[in-house]
Image 1 (cartoon, rainbow, N blue to C red):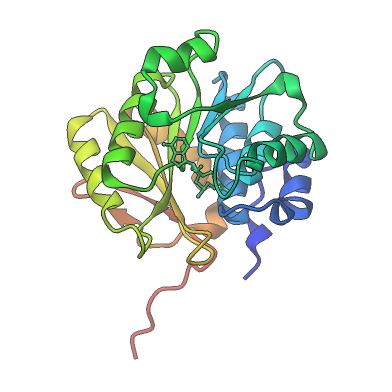
Image 2 (cartoon, protein in one colour):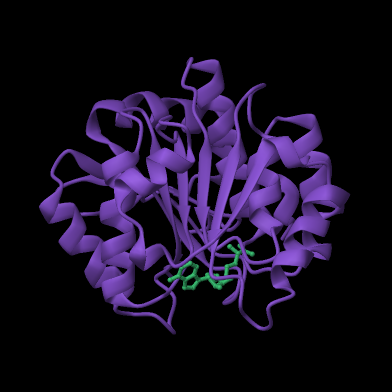
Length: 254
Ligand SMILES: C[S@@+](CC[C@H](N)C(=O)[O-])C[C@H]1O[C@@H](n2cnc3c(N)ncnc32)[C@H](O)[C@@H]1O
């Protein structure tokens, strides 16, 4: 399967995803990066502006793709403990950003524990600008995901999206409980799309948005990624959403 089949449509971003991405140590898939950066392109075309935030950028693999997809004047904020597997991980993050064309004025590396951040801390770091895209890929416990989801929702722009990593991962089954509890607490939010995994490590992501923006974003994703649509979709009872995959086959019934 060709992981590069889903391109963002942004030439510099696609060159990085094809050429540099897998050389930056990290976990997110090229397929997910292509679609998420395509979503940033769709937002820009729709007049949606604002910074992007990643909780857990690690060495910068996915962060660089997001940052390269921003419109002029926008910035990317990476929040990480930057202590694993050693404290030099922050230096490697900065070196990777420099190497792949995300200059210092377009990025903020914030060495902190997301669990200790109040929404106002986050907004202050962003100069009061509400993010249009937040990728949550920090601590993979049920409690931490619930808390990261709450702080992300509190600061998100009205038209913003939240992307969750490692969904449906066999190693983290309780994360799905957090997501369902969150959706019950926030009936204005829904799952916009599921981005299928490439491998067990380069795992599935869920994209969330406010229901008021669902149709507009879904139409745009359908138009741009029709070859990646798995025909049956995902049933969130009663809400349905797109499943985007590199493998769009149905089970053979013989
Ligand atoms: C799986 S890695 C992220 C991989 C990266 N997003 C990618 O796609 O390549 C998880 C990161 O979350 C960070 N992390 C874990 N708990 C955190 C917390 N409470 N606050 C901030 N960062 C945290 C870790 O330090 C680690 O760098």
